[in-house]
Structures are given as C-alpha cells and as structure tokens.
Length: 531
Ligand SMILES: NC(=O)C1=CN([C@@H]2O[C@H](COP(=O)(O)OP(=O)(O)OC[C@H]3O[C@@H](n4cnc5c(N)ncnc54)[C@H](O)[C@@H]3O)[C@@H](O)[C@H]2O)C=CC1
Ligand SMILES: CC(=O)C(=O)O
Ligand SMILES: [Mg+2]
Image (cartoon, rainbow, N blue to C red; front, side, top):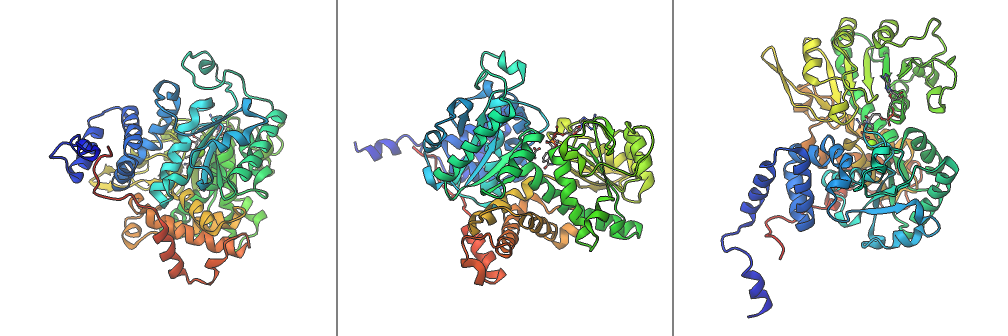
C-alpha cells in the first residue's frame, strides 16, 4: 500500500470540512470554564493553525474574549500550570551577553515582522506575573493575525524573563521562569539595550510592540528607544489612541444631548499609571484638534491616583505624574473619589486604576446628576478589575451613560430598551498601527501616526453604528477597520518622512486601501485536518 493511501485511510470516510468546523465549535462550546476553552484553542492552533484562524475570524465575538481579555488573564495567572509546549521565545537575564544567538534560534528567522514583547511585570491589571506573561504576547499577536491580516509566520511572541518579585511564583515548584527577583534599573537598562540592538540586527525589518511593562519601565524604555528603533508601547500609545477615538465620538453624543460646546469637556482620570497618563496625554489632542493651545487643554484634565487628586505640591511625585499635577487646587488633600468629582465637576470619568467597582453607585449617580449624558469609561482589565459593570452603569444613570470598558460586556436590557456597550481596548488600533508601519517600513512610530490611527478609527463608524449611538465600530468589522487605520498610519508616516518604503506615495487613497486589503492574510477555507 502506498504511503498516501495509508494516510487517506486514517481520515474517516464521512469527514467533511464544513462539518469539521462545526465539530470544533461544538467541542469548544462544550467547555464551560474559560481557561479550558483557552487550552482547547491552543491545542487547535498547534494541530491545525489554518482552522484555528478560520474559527477566530468567523466567531470574533465569541473567541476574542478567550484568546484575549478577560480569559488571557487567567491563562497568564496559571501559565506555569497549563503550559503544554513552546509557543514563543523566552529571552532571560541569564542570556545577557549572547542575546543575538537566542534570537537567531527563532524558527521563522528573518521573516518575522512584528514582535510583541513583555517582561511580565504588569500583565493587564494582575501585577507581576514574571515568565507567566507570555500568553499576553501570544494573544495580542493572534489579534494582529485576526484583526489586521498579518501572516501568522511573521509574528514573534517574546517574554523577557528577568525574574519576578511575586513571592508565590518563586515558591511554586511548577513555576516556569527563573527563580530570582527582578534586576535593579542599571542591570535592566543594560539588558534592554543589548536586547533591542540584537533585535535590530537579527530581525532588521521587525516592529516591536512593548506590552505590559510596569509603569516606570514602560515610559523609560519607550523614551529610550522610540527615536532609534521601530518600536511603540501599546499601553501608553495604543491605549491613548483608542481612547481618544472613542472619546471623540462620546463627546459628540454628550454635546448633542447637553447643547454645550465640545470644548467644555472636563476629564477626570482615576488611575495615573502608564495607561492613565498615556491616555491623558493623547486626549490633549481632543482639545488641540479643536484649535485650543496645549497649555489650555491641560487645564481640562485632572488625574487621581491611590493617594487622591494629584497636585503639584505633593511630595515625591513620580515623574510621569508631574505633567498633569494640578497647581490650582488649594485645600486639604482630596482622597475620596466623590469629593474629587464634587470639586472638578467632570463631564467624563475614565478608570485605569485596576480597582474593581471603584465607580460606586454614589459616584455614578453623582456623574449623572452633573451631566445629561455622563461619559464613563471603566477601562481596567480584565473584567474582574473593571471599575463598574455595564448593567450597574445603565441602571444608576437611567440609561444616560456613554460607556466603554476595557474588557467586553454584553448588551443590557433596561426599561424595555436594549443598550449596547463600547469596548475601549487598544485591540482596535494596534493591529492597524502595526500593519501600516510594516507596509510603509516606518523607521519609527511617530506621534502623528498614533493620532491619525485614532482619527481613522473614530471616523470608521458606519450609518447603522452611528444610529445605534455607538462610540466604537462593531468588532466584527475589525479587518476593514484595521485596513483604514493602516492607511492613515501609512499617510502619517509619509508626512513625517519615516517611510522607508516610498512606493505608496504616488498611490491614491483608494488604490492604497485596495492594496492593503489585498495584502491581508486569510486562512484557506474548506480543508480537512492535516495528517
Ligand atoms: N482598555 C485598554 O485598552 C487598556 C487598559 N489597561 C488597564 O489599565 C489598568 C492600569 O494599567 P497601568 O496604568 O499600566 O497600571 P498601574 O498600576 O501603573 O496604574 C494604576 C494606577 O491606578 C492608581 N490606583 C491604584 N489604586 C487606586 C485607588 N484605590 N484609588 C485611586 N487610584 C488608584 C495607581 O496609583 C496608579 O496610578 C490595568 O488594569 C490595565 O489592564 C491598560 C492598557 C490598555
Ligand atoms: C489591553 C491592555 O493592553 C492591557 O490591559 O494592558
Ligand atoms: Mg497591555
């Protein structure tokens, strides 16, 4: 018997590709725990990557919350226990001195175009998970493939294993990382410099997305490398971009309801870490795009951290908090959120604090009493750390809230009406920022590329989405949206003269959009399991 006949005989006679897709979905749906679904999908990706991406693309609303927030949070928290096979690259502090060789071991070699790199020190809002952080890099890259059509073989998930300061992992016999505490700043700086140099040498075309570094290091390494390398920070820039976008649409809805000018927005940030300050800086554009000077725009933004309203007279203020520290508040420290709201009278309350249910009934009702349509964005991930649940926000505002959360919520029925939440998550922009940067071979990711991505997303709502009062487009359109975002990113790269690939300069927008869409990788359909 020939080998091919032997192989064919291993496929059951009545196996058809369409049925098999349904079989896979049935198997997935038979699992009732998120983490089990995550493990199942990981196995599917290993067995049949094509089918995995097909299932992802045709069931985005069901599958994204498993591969990404919230379930990826469980996967990271438990990664040492659920680990099955190598899925990405670990570069450890012990590799210092020969990081190039470690990078060269990546099977796809120079084909890599996009790497998501975490050091596991602040995974979502779950803290220092050390080497368990790898699934966040994998999940983000699944969205690059699903959302933007980046070819799977060109993606590179990396976890930098520099140790962990979380004692329970150091004591866990199954912990997969190096058993040591994290290095001090000079040691980490040396490591990061060697790592980034080696990345550029081994993968000259590669764009690096920094992900879930603890706040100080997030700002530090973005500042250190952004003007030398192809790199951006998703938590600072990606989140800034996506929230500006949702905010542009939310402010229009609020302004239409109140009759007040758009520029009257007063924005209160609850949480002032990499995400909070990253978003606050990007939201300055909301005002400057309307012609306001930056100094004036800054006056429309207040920030709160675990010690209360951030004021310039506070001792030992971390560097990243200084820019928005208020100089105009005199009085005792304002530590209760309700007191800060009574003082600031915000039109918008944005949560990036990791504090579950911090937006209590009092707080939400207070926002509703101050505004016809209060903008409330509880953006902390995963759902277990969200500042307020959607159903509560709808109930406590009698349906008037304009809402977007970091992790997904289901629609809510209130007084016989269905309300649909927005999801203000950087997943709406990083795939398009990456795609546009890769296609234009951008030397750097400039501020204008990030801002234009945001505007492209904000203007991508179709008539039906606008009529439904949404602030973000539906996720099911993510491929199309990412293509529009990528187009805006390419154009901004050209204006900033950072496009090494200048071939697109003479193309019309329509022609370039067609080109981008044609470049999007798609899984082949109607196949049977591989032998
Ligand atoms: N929706 C999205 O796309 C994104 C959401 N995030 C989420 O944002 C959250 C924060 O991330 P980072 O800024 O990097 O973390 P971080 O830990 O640096 O920042 C948290 C901030 O919240 C403040 N805070 C903590 N407890 C508080 C309390 N009781 N009252 C007031 N403020 C308090 C801290 O002082 C700090 O300023 C995480 O949950 C993360 O998942 C981050 C990036 C993107
Ligand atoms: C969404 C994301 O990047 C975060 O929560 O860190
Ligand atoms: Mg992140």
